[in-house]
Image 1 (cartoon, protein in one colour):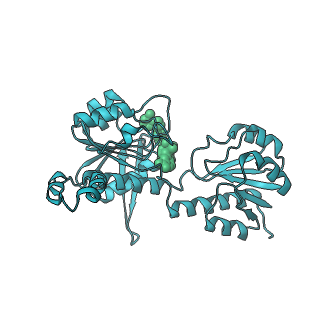
Image 2 (tube, helix red, strand yellow):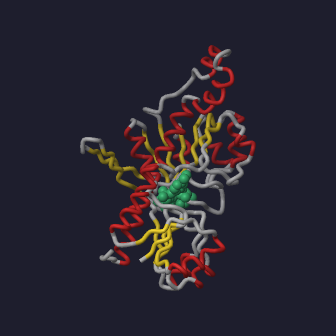
Image 3 (tube, protein in one colour):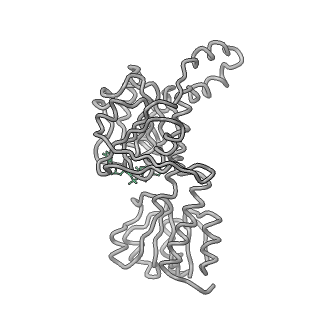
Length: 320
Ligand SMILES: NC(=O)c1ccc[n+]([C@@H]2O[C@H](COP(=O)([O-])OP(=O)(O)OC[C@H]3O[C@@H](n4cnc5c(N)ncnc54)[C@H](O)[C@@H]3O)[C@@H](O)[C@H]2O)c1
């Protein structure tokens, strides 16, 4: 049986599929030629990330499809219900990148607390002539240990963030619309671990008591953090959004940065992607990454091998 990984797949994923008896094609076929390619090659499994669209018309014109797989979380690019109505399995790998996103949150947090985002902008320009004044500018850093991290959205990624925070000695408080409490297992390299139970609190309480706030909720119709929410927060708070653009009101964020209410922000996701607002890009208090939360080699490997094992168990191919 043939698998078309139209938006790419890790080497480990290809190897696992081949070991399961599948032939893996990694050609990137243009959207308008996809139906023909799938039919000509009798593709049984179509794997995509976010680029390839799998809409009703494609599903209707490709009767050989048995599985549509999305490497990653969001499935906005697939007509999931329609495919399932037609008897096609639709699978994804929701947990494969949680740890990668959580680590990026800490890259922004550690960097923000010590002004690395700004220092990295200014050292190349003035490091050789203004060393002493730059040193003074970045002198009032803060440590994360002992501080309170507020996690909004205590699902897969929120809990991975909690593990790292507990590991470095932060106090963790969290809020979630649906999760009441969670057991966070912090594992060490030698097999030892500790369990910490965290009960969620109303969002207002979390915002009021956090030194740093990080968001891990899905996209929603309204902002989760708007002008009123910034007002509740501690002065000098740091805030991270590696969830989805539109979860934070960016205009209110810039105002809060300008007033000093928010000391720094870390953004991996933006209201306007792929063309974030210039005001956001140019603000020296914002640490910026171009939506790379899930983009680690380890996450790509997990995505590939998790998809492969789901495909193998669904189609149970035994012979090569
Ligand atoms: N930056 C990246 O590259 C990247 C990568 C993967 C996922 N993400 C994003 O991260 C977010 C979280 O992903 P996840 O896998 O942890 O999802 P998840 O479904 O496991 O967890 C989300 C949690 O948010 C809670 N929630 C929903 N609305 C809420 C609200 N208004 N207030 C408080 N809690 C609310 C839910 O109850 C759930 O527990 C998603 O938006 C996802 O798209 C970003």
